[in-house]
Amino acid sequence: MRVYLGSDHAGYVVKRVLIRRLRELDHDPVDVGPHAFVQDDDYPPYVLETARRVVADPGSLGVVLGGSGNGEAIAANKVDGIRAVLAWSEDSARFGREHHHANVISIGARVHSVAETTRFVEVFVKAPVSRDARHLRRIGMLTDYEQRRRK
Ligand SMILES: O=C(CO)[C@H](O)[C@H](O)COP(=O)(O)O
Image 1: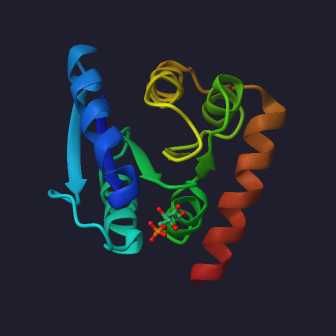
Image 2 (image 1 turned 30 degrees about the horizontal axis):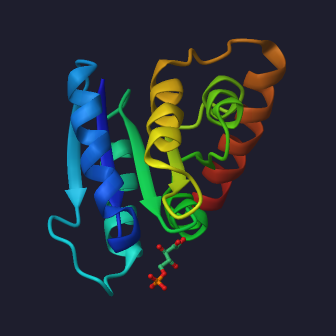
Image 3 (image 1 turned 180 degrees about the vertical axis):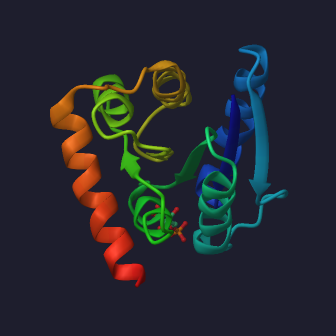
């Protein structure tokens, strides 16, 4: 699976670890940036571009990383077609994918260890999406809202 990854300085180191891990698992990680550590860089350009790349590549997923993951989730969800979830446990990562068909996971690198972050991403990319009627109905309501807003 292709996985686009974007961050800021706070998520930069763990992003590199995740890219290596995703390659080991035979995924196709794409580093959307930053491509060098810059202490005071800003997450929105990297996260918005990661989200745009996910929407433009159906079936792909995104991982966005910052200090808390909060701003990154907000930014990713500004892009039409994105359902980004802030993961704070393995279950929250799994349910984000299964119940909400999240296509982007956001994680706080100052909140979770590298091992925890890696595990959240492993769980997220592996989780199947639910086809249960109630989940599809709820996702459909959000998609309808998004499409009406576009008109
Ligand atoms: O978590 C973040 C956004 O969600 C940022 O990584 C965080 O706000 C950066 O903080 P600072 O500029 O103080 O290093």
